[in-house]
Amino acid sequence: MLYTIDILGTIAFAISGVLVAFDKKMDLFGVLIIAFVTAVGGGTLRDLLIGNTPVSWMQDMNYTYAILGSAIFAIVVRNKINYLRTSLFLFDTIGIGLYTLVGIEKGLSADLHPIICIALGTITASFGGVIRDILCNEIPVIFRKEIYATACILGGVVYFVLHEFPIKDDFVFIIAGLVVITTRLLAVKFKIALPNIYRNADKS
Image (cartoon, rainbow, N blue to C red; front, side):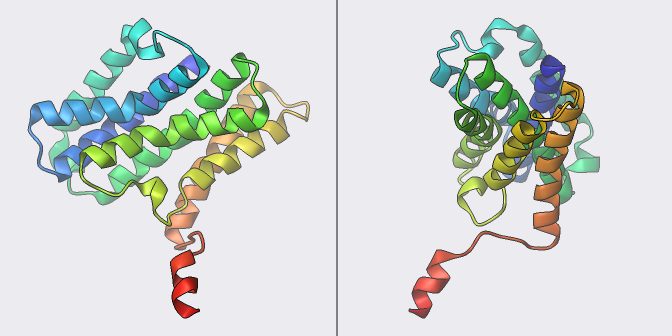
């Protein structure tokens, strides 16, 4: 199941990368590069941190096939999804939900402390988007006031709490992933954000 989740996360992030590249009016090469770094950037950093080399996508061509297939799909149906800003948000949100769990499991397989596992999950989920936004000359979402990494951390905490109860691993995965996705969706819908420290500083 972990492998399936990893592939699904790769697909979701690849499509979100394509949508950003469309928005920046990049050529075909630029679209493919942004799709690729968005999909594997966080996982690459995670694997390097835990010493898992060569990194996952270099050992399994299915990741490359998934990215290329997703990019081609997004390009073919671009007239249907390109103008929908919610498409980017939706695929990005699904991606962080799935990749958070993958990162946590990778940390557990390396016998790391739960807090470090949650950090790895957050890195896996967030840093592909960070690289994408930097290459596209945008301030990464994780560094803005939006609830993004916080959703990953919350999902990670729920994951470890649920493991203290007699619940099947499949259900733990589903519930923790839904917590990440739902938290981000609700935060955007109701404009919930982290406190703005600069606003308080200005008042003083």
